Image (cartoon, rainbow, N blue to C red; front, side, top):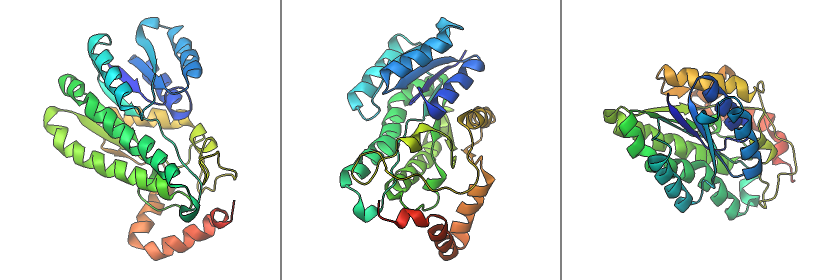
Length: 265
């Protein structure tokens, strides 16, 4: 039985991933900032088999908390087979209107936290011959208006783990990068505005919105097929290809599709 650790596990894609991991017979360690919701979600799974569920409140930007959690994994949880870096945050705001603190927060949650989690867990993953699943974004592959900080963080995430993959392959550690586009999850509902408060305007989007359950199934399928990258949405994959082949045309189309992002909010 494999042990799977999931960050941001109490809602959205994290909750769907927790349910999927549990349904596959894995032991699930759930972490999240929202302690009350996390406990309720864990109880829901534990009602089926309490031996396969544990949960820990975790602020992924707290280095000491990460260190303590990994020590707990060594001492009481019996090691680790799969780390899923899912916790994330985004913003909807023009770059020149955004407080630098917003960019720092987005980078801390979306880049620094997954990196710290991965590096801290690597000794355990080397022992188990396990792996890391990172929930990136198509915004890390192509620019999206109003998401300068988010695009930067997800791009940095991708580059770090592409390098790490080559460095840890010799230990049998597998890394899957997942690049979803528009999912019906709280990450957009809780998006930050230019001042760090909740964004006041609805998100712009292209293509179809998918459910987190749809995404979670594809994530585990791709991981067990040892895929290195998962592009589940063909429309946004095509858009990222267009960005590489015809960047000026892509920019014009993006400005047209995301015109509302250029309006003052």
